[in-house]
Length: 184
Image 1 (cartoon, rainbow, N blue to C red):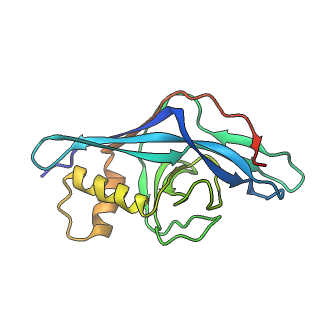
Image 2 (spheres, helix red, strand yellow):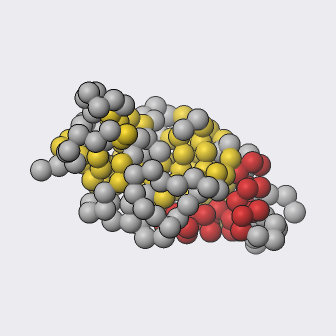
């Protein structure tokens, strides 16, 4: 059975907010950044269209050196990328999570686990797509597996095959880069 195409769309309009701190160097401040809608489209095993929306972070606060001023980073222009790989051992750098692994969009831009509670759980983010909500990254991966049609015998093999197959395409809708906003 051939694998089925999966379309990912990162929305352009803010949906909610999250609290973050600069990455990789903290400055003692917390910042507010918007969250966005992230939609997954595909077809199920019976050929019916299926989609689901998730809440994600797409912009972050970067501070590359201890003496640098923080700035907003992330992909703002409309662009399309084919997912390059599943990275099974990736771990979020700025917080503890049980949801490991990431999808490589390109270079260091990834899709991975994000804050369970975006306004109270503190993560740093540097422009990756971070899926918010309790166990939502796992649910995202479950959906991707179900939409793919993979017949591999283990979850790890399914994720690896999907990641290397070129069936997942992500579209970033053009979004206004948010202002740097300190949380009081």
